[in-house]
Amino acid sequence: MSGGKPFPWLVAAAFASMCLIWSSTWMMIAVGLRGAPPLSGVSLRFLIAAALAAALLAMRRVPLPRDQRFLRLGIALGVLQVAAPYVLVYWAEERISSGLTAVLYSTMPLVVAIFARFLLGDRLTVTKFIGICAGIGGVAIIFSDRLTVGSSLGICFVLASVVFASIAAVITKKHARAYDPQALLFVSFLVGGVLALVIAVPLERSNPLRYDAVTWMSILYLAALGSVAAFSLFFWVLRHVEVTVVSYQTFVIPILAVLMGWLFLDETISARTGLGAALILAGIAVATYHASRSSSRRSS
Image 1 (cartoon, rainbow, N blue to C red):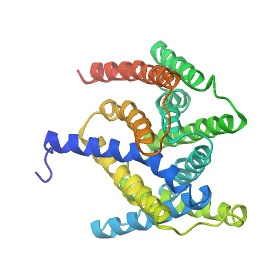
Image 2: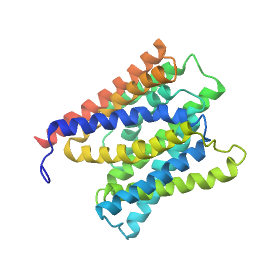
Image 3: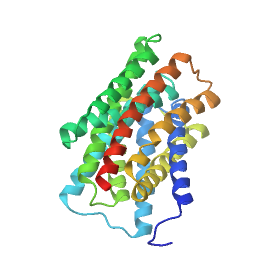
Image 4: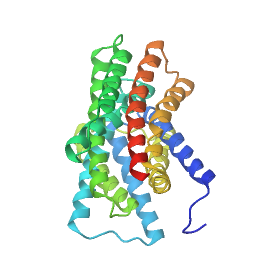
């Protein structure tokens, strides 16, 4: 099997594991926030993740590229893919539930479509535009009856996080193909963790981390599984199946995240939340279906 095509069941298991891990991270962030301030939590998570990524690179004997382009890309992803979006998500989950945060984050493919139009020259087709409008409508439905100052800030933080992560996704697609994924993860995790730490020191000095077992369990889980393992699975699956198939995680993760929040954190699921989530996922389905058809035409 080495060097050949992996068994289909192995790819399916890797995809399912990736979805399950990323679905659980929203809940684990909420658990960690009970004992750790958000900036400190982000910093510890990604500094530990950087150490784990470095260990994996050493085991694989993969050297870090020394060119300036790799360094600039790693720093950019550390800011745009790690520090900014995750700090905003942690802040959001202090104000809104983990399940709703995951549902809002599922709008990312629609935002990526907008940035890809301007940064990569991809066409913004009618179906993509319909999908974007449906996603916006779904967000509006979910929060139309629960807008408070806190929830409004939470919504803004998540949507701003989606913008940063979408820019990072487009940059990755455009510039990261020549580099080992775990090498880029190491640099971006390290930059993001250090940046969050620098900001946390003055802002969270009066709100220290509680060193209880549950807090450390959530941080270690998010570092080892939610960061290193899930991203490594993502890149491995991406090598063996079409990118449109990998994008189906967008449908699975928010549903599982909402269910986990309901089962383990006693978060409520209203009919309005269900309707809004369905509209968001329908919008993503429209855009994904178009991308899948376009990809099929190019390959035939």
